[in-house]
Image (cartoon, rainbow, N blue to C red; front, side, top):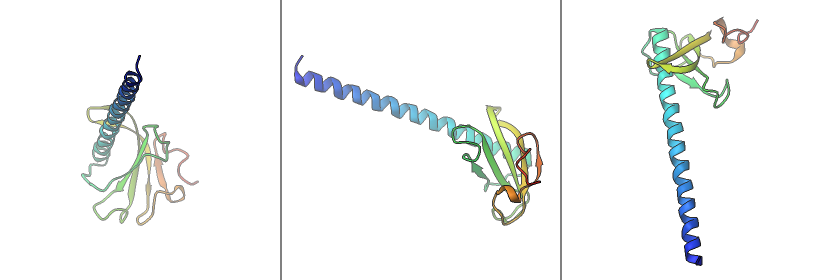
Length: 131
């Protein structure tokens, strides 16, 4: 086998590897986007508010865990200017929404720090509010 044939084969293998990695990454991103859109629909259905400024936290419960915390105002107003409700959401997307497993409230003009949380509800909210 000639040197040119070996180089061509190696370049084709590297190209194939990059193509597979790209397709895998795009599929993962599409799955994540589908899940986050379902999270927003879940928050809107649960709170009966069609607000657009809902914060999605994918890190607190573990990156890659597919468990998110969504926080948004309980009444109309600028972000964090009103009492916030935070929902803990996970599970499969069914009918365009996911399951709410609990949550809590935070006062206006504060971030979602455990010391500021109150009114925890559901199993995911237990132990996440100060005592």
